[in-house]
Length: 320
Image 1 (cartoon, rainbow, N blue to C red):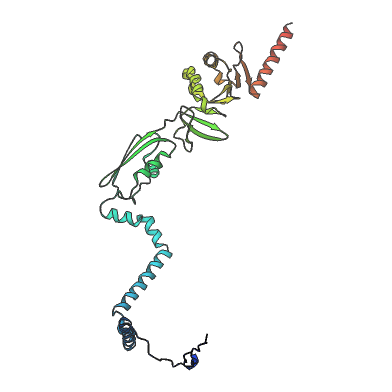
Image 2 (tube, one colour):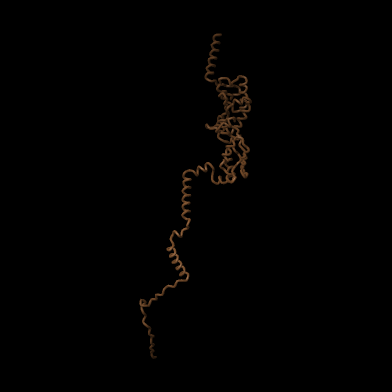
């Protein structure tokens, strides 16, 4: 078997890459990019060509000057305190505008007044000559009124164009309560209504001591047994939560028993009727024992009483 020789095709020798010819064709721009580039070049030429002063609005300087002047005046008005003074004298700007349009508060109707004055109600409701009806908050005024201790319930209504209606239900003062050196007005159930700051409720009966406010009705029931003599009872002090001591208007102390204090008060009235004890130099009367009356005299009365007893004793010895 004979061997065949196969001739291999001849290839041209490969050229190195570094010797390959490089094409220097310019990059092709899209039509839109070409237009944008031309517009930007034209805009730069235009901006450079037109001076800045010609490109600004003609009245810009005037407006800037006016703005600076306004800002300066406003700053001086606020920092100088004139803004606050204007609000103090005429109210907030919104209220001034509303009043200028005819929506001021020209009339306030208040019903249910008893212990409070009209001015106190107006202050509590936040109503004054600087308030306008449009921006007056009736619900907030109601809350402020009901926060006043003497007012149990309040209703506030706005009646256009210029009236406010206020209806009040006050807590009724029942007695005065003194505790730890402070004086309070209380209701019948002992609830503190307000602190006693003036003499409006000086006519009310006075109870003194811890928990005396919750037993004021008990004291008034005892006091009612005194009849006309009750006008001489200035106050009652609750002692140890068990019984009462009365303080009379001449400074005399009357000690009542823990049980049946009404009967003891009736005995006190009888003593005044029979012996005029209010005119005597008596510092205290003890009525705690139902079958006896113990009196403590003043120093002068006690000395006079001692001299009187000594004189009687000498007379008896002389007679003997």
